Length: 148
Image (cartoon, rainbow, N blue to C red; front, side, top):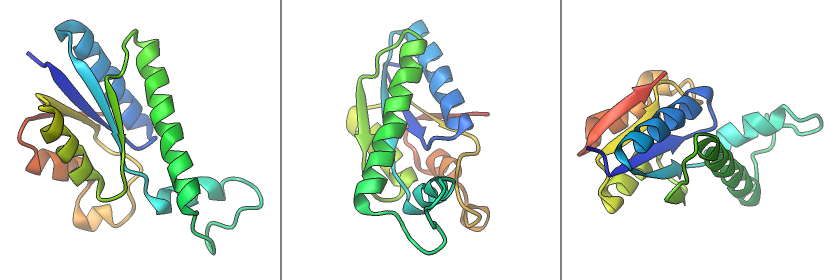
């Protein structure tokens, strides 16, 4: 039924649940799982602000810090997949708009399904503009599943 599944990750608990659900489906259907993460400087700044001595309110993270953060999220995603006895087929880490990157990955690999968390680490602006998951559900050319 599903040959290729794309999972959008942002480091949230909902995204991890989405990955676990995707791995469960992949086991059942013999699917490849592709991970997509689009690092957002604001989210990285917030995370770094939790570290003593880093002033997120006055300093945005460097491009290197954003890249490192993105790699850590994808690495954590691979670890979650391994704990579910599944190996990730491909990871994608690109700057830009998260929903567009998820959809572009799905189109490029010919995905049958996109799985995202219902609510991730999106900003307050998402309440006005709509969330990444809402945009993916609206624009995707394949089936979409939102995990809690």
